[in-house]
Length: 220
Image (spheres, rainbow, N blue to C red):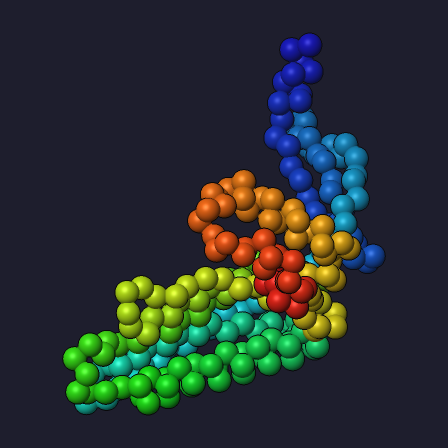
């Protein structure tokens, strides 16, 4: 028994060897008497992970040597290699970046129009949108956008949005593309929401709002 334990206590190594069929072979080895003994091989499906590159652009708008608006936008793109493998997804991300850059320009130009140097209550505006990759593989690319917008007043506006793309087609996925029963899904969301938060904290017509939601209006 002691000899068996000593043998089994040898270092254990795992080697992944890529095969022609695109799967990864997991080989278990034990080190014994100066050599490696192969204990067997287990097939594991490989899910290629996409390489997503993120860039952050920061700009400011000035009037009378004062910053009247600062804006930040994240943009994402596929690596050159993955862009060749998933061209439609690469184009979809280019379009998303184009739209985000346009909202950035609108924010900066809007601040210039709203600026009034004679108004002592005017303060510098802040418009930030940041992207975080939640999933990136050969099936789906999921992004989470967190935004922060301050245009003066007591408090800013902030929140989060989701973007989900089919990696092969580049099409944006709606909630009913992955949920078979949308109405039941909304009922479960409503039930969970009221489990976490006091119902009195919401507007009186919050239940009617759930009834009016459509898949296109839900960010996930």
